[in-house]
Image (tube, rainbow, N blue to C red; front, side, top):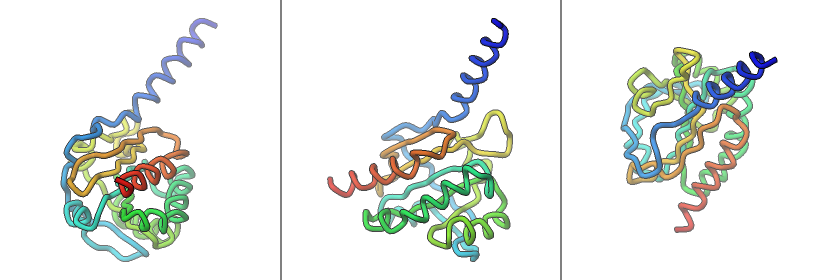
Length: 176
């Protein structure tokens, strides 16, 4: 019985460590250029270029076409007009290859926002490597101000709350 309780406690501690974002509010967001897709079409995504248009919601998700990641993408797609009204651009990021993201951008994102491939340098720079599953990222959402500074962080493996909290953060920025 004690061993079972210990193992459950240890598993919970390890799972919560997997979703700890290292970048804190006020930190400089690492700039990057990578390949992405929107509505099935590939293109190059550069964070600094996106920031010229306003704040960016950069949300990392573990793997395309998994239940939680698909649900999160659909929720972002359903709320994309609210993000746009607040002046924000949404970009989903995963360690998946671009070919997988092309299909994901059409099916789960409904062509409404870009998803991009987070290579090792991006994953390391944002400290979102999923410790227990190499080659995947934590579920961490960053709101990045046009200045390039992190304005808000939500890091939790459950997708519930990421869209609502990042939208609230972007809307609060607009009111300032």
